[in-house]
Image (tube, rainbow, N blue to C red; front, side, top):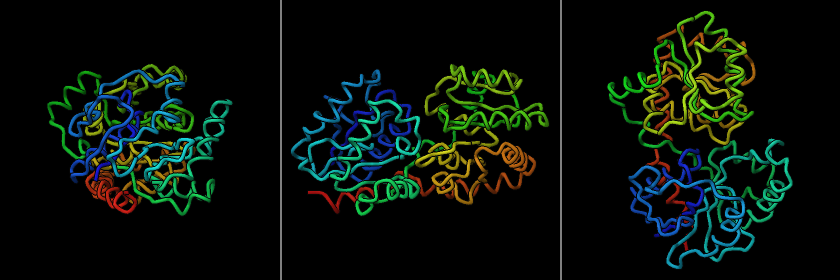
Length: 366
């Protein structure tokens, strides 16, 4: 069986969706399932290479994205068994080949700010109209499947839940020397060290975390919070200054995956205050590394973390302060959470998840 995979979205290799495609292709290759990449003309997929061996490229212009999703993707190779579109989209013409579409989240439909402009309303209106033509829809969490049932009930019969996966690098220990080099490069000298990995748009709720950290660090003046990728985020910088946290918050530039893995392994606690997710990949990565996780109690994230971490109301500052202090005050609890997390993360191993996709493909392939 040979699968055509739309890899057009792989550009800078920094988003969760890009990592999802990379991990899925890697897992399928381990099963012996052939995958042909579509949308990156002339570039073969190399599953064992970072970013599948694809060269990074600038973000596409809107017209280029529109052309691919409406016209370019129609030219599926004749010798493949099905097409997998790994993001929420389906072209206006029904394809002659079985098609799997992955839905990561329903942010554009749940959060008003994501479809405020006319072009966004048109785009997401097209998805609503044409997505029913997909042979199968994969929701990466039960929470996302529930969103589909709520907002697109006519699609429920086509939905299969297969969780997202964590790249194998997060399951491997990093040499102490590498962690020391990372700590030296970014001047990581304080303890306890809290870590946040994720975005900085409104739903990520980082301001609540910063407010909580002001109280945590008042009690623990030697502590620090590391915010990955926030170095040039002016909003974060402003709030850090307003809260007087300059000595306690380190905002890094965007890091390579290898650096992120090493950074996870230097942390004492991972914190994730997001108010809405389709899955919650950073908490899953932290579980795989084996550090305690405190996260916002939202449907998708609670589904990922389960009883292996501690969940708090996302916007309740006092709850964040109390829970962070509880973990830092109780080493035995932190160790128990880390052990449970590593066991839980095995459910997100791409070897396991790729087998679920392969079974799905076998059912619908032509």
